[in-house]
Length: 366
Image (cartoon, rainbow, N blue to C red):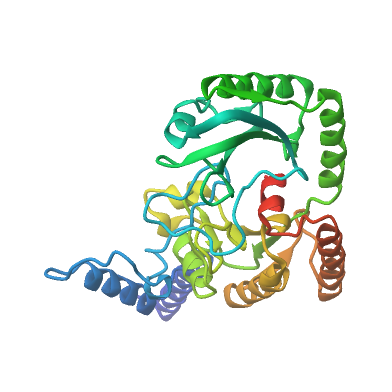
């Protein structure tokens, strides 16, 4: 073999090795980022210890002692009572008919009615169209209005329907359905209902709906990958370090409040299909969203500040940028303007007795 042939062979081998090396480098560089192995091993060890042989499982566990994969989104439904054995929110009583956002029909009684009879007389569905319907009784012993409870006795009842929610204002058809349900309940407990004038209540519902529509704020940031995509595990690991826990829906995480039963402070979501893939580690996520439902979260939680800090931290740690839904970068000056606008919104809601995060606000903006 001549020197020229040998030199060309060596050069060709070097070029081939360089191409293979470059392709390998680019493949690794563009592969979805994976969670740190140390954190994954630690989480696996914690789960193993929690389920180890001879160790009695704990019924009440401090959420801070659970690994991110074991913690889940808290349930919140304003129309459902808390499950038995689960403590309710320690703040202001949830629900409670209020003339500010409800049509209320008093039901007078000739005597006393039992809670058992009232429960049996409840309508099968607690809605009139898209509006929640609630029934409360005046407890003979406490003198307080409450949802009927078995074993208690009540001297009066009141049936209410919500004036507005995010589906719109109470209309004439929904009001008529409410009247039918309330009348059926009153007949079953031998009571006499008194209904407000329909046209007045529908007009009041429209006014409340106009106010709510003008002061409803749901913020969203988009975090976009600058270079390499992210795997679901990588997103979950970084979010968990900021206090986010697994949501009920695959691809969703939430930042919970300190009280059980309340809506989460923030939401984080990415592609559901990526989370459900046969091999999630190979799923490529190039963007995720952070969301804040302003009226649902107490102002004292400082949700916007926490949302802003979470977005900045995730962008820094995951090599991404924070944008709006149109892909425009959100700079500090823009964030400051949004924060100032939110403060004014909070003040307006406070002045209307619909403070963000209050039971009435959570019901109205739902």
